[in-house]
Image 1 (cartoon, rainbow, N blue to C red):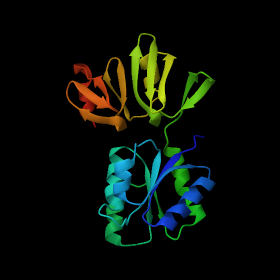
Image 2 (cartoon, one colour):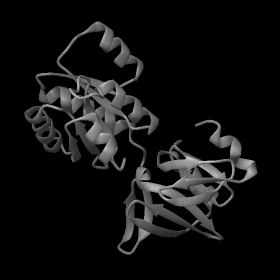
Image 3 (spheres, one colour):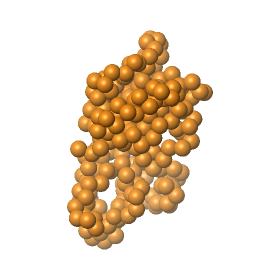
Length: 219
């Protein structure tokens, strides 16, 4: 199973370190710890699989605000809470977290939440690289470009070329990939600017053809 990459957004330093230790000990990978929603949104590159978020962050942005941004980027998340305020929990429920973890944390509660996250992760792709067949996380693919009988998979770590048609890989990809051109598939989580004729995806301009414009209307 893919070792899921987790970020923790928790304003209490010792609580954040405790959760980090638990997550790592359970076989997952903490790739970032942030002590405010502002810090997270300013510095994240969105190259993680899921987030653990304290509902009651102490700065201007609370955990509900952060969760809304996570939903925009289609990232699953778990809420941390020591407060049972019914109004806040009702608002939190509308954001559809994967689970809740109550403070003080119990290992079994953290483990259960992470297992739910693991089952929600997209299936890994098998690609042929310099070292033979390798596993590629679809979350790491920014866009895919067709070039004849080859495709270029542009990822956060570089480019991978495969002898395959674009239509053959489409069925293997999760639903956060859309076709915007006969030669391009794009991961919607990396879309920055967009217009009727092109997208800016991680600084790269991707053409949008007339026949596929309607796909953007679904975002």
